Image (cartoon, rainbow, N blue to C red):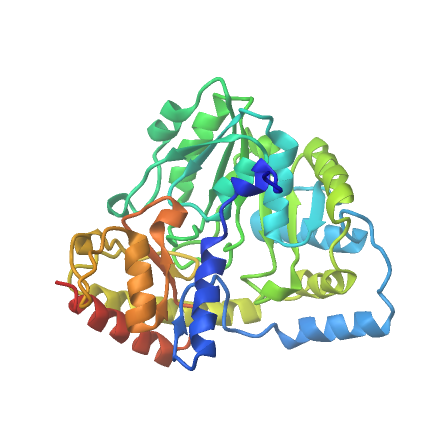
Amino acid sequence: MNLLSNRINNLSESATIRMNKLGRELKAKGIDVISLSFGETDFNTPDYIKAAAKEAIDSNYSFYTPVSGYADLRKAISEKLDRENGLKYAFDQIVVSTGAKQCLTNALLCLVNPGDEVIIPTPYWVSYSEMVKLAEGKAVFLTTGIDNDFKITASQLEESITSKTKVFMFSSPNNPTGSVYTREELAGLAAVFERHPSLYIISDEIYEHINFSQKHVSIAEFQNIKDRVIIVNGLSKAFAMTGWRLGFSASNKEIAVACDKLQGQVTSATCSISQRAALAAYNGNLDTVKEMKTVFKARRDMVFHLLSQIDGLKVNEPQGAFYFFPDVSNFFGRKTPDGDIIKTSTDIAYYLLYKAHVAVVSGIDFGDDSCIRLSYAASTDILKEAMLRIKNALSLLS
């Protein structure tokens, strides 16, 4: 007798969480493991945000809040979208949730019926496909590659749309590739969306402020499709607040009401203290964000230089987020010093973990088995050591 539901049995474990767990297990045995597997900055939450949280505790913000979040926080997010992005959303079109991950899941569960198709460009963040499974939809993957900077074209999008297509789901800046769609590229996609009025767009913009190439452009800036766009964003990356678990969605009123309804039956509102901290973040300036971005760009440049010197590795220069997604397919078919044959990106990831003691994530979990993902959200010295270990370990493959 199978105790567990088909729903949970068909669900995959998060690859990033799995690799981070394996790295921690090796560390517990006294092995010096460098983890480049997690999507988390190594910066601390800014002091003015922490002070707001402490004040909230002392002011007894310890009671239930409205499901979609405090009204003043939602207004602050509305003003942020207007001020920084030129987007007009009323406060009641904002739903605050327990992380951007919940916002994405809310949107899919509110839009997708069993059998509906959800178009996802590859590579994609590992949880997208699993969220579609939970919504009982069908993920349709659009393949990209390192040679085109991991971005789809308008014609590729057009060809993938069918009568069953309900949602297009993507991120820019992208996790895992760091690729950023330009305004011109987004305009091309928006023109396709305009021709398909029953298709909704979930735009994951969590890496909005870690963008080295241009001012962030949201697909919602194209007015003819704005009403069908669900923006998802949050505090984790820009404000170094991964553990605070707060994200938000911005959408048309009908979808916002639906997300509120769903959330009311699942988690209700997110943490009241995190919400008061978020209010300080969104009402404050972006000085700490800009400082962090400068550091990330310097790290990006250094790691790009070091990765480019590794024979057999193919790498492009990411324009945002804090990841590299190098192509490792040149190593497939080679032998490890122990005689094992490298066949997949998973083999590479485990080889680097146990031989080089560097934790990365296999590309197959992001929809591209030719690559691996590594994060450069670590100090310069740690990154230099990690790149040296990777270079030495790969040189041993014959």
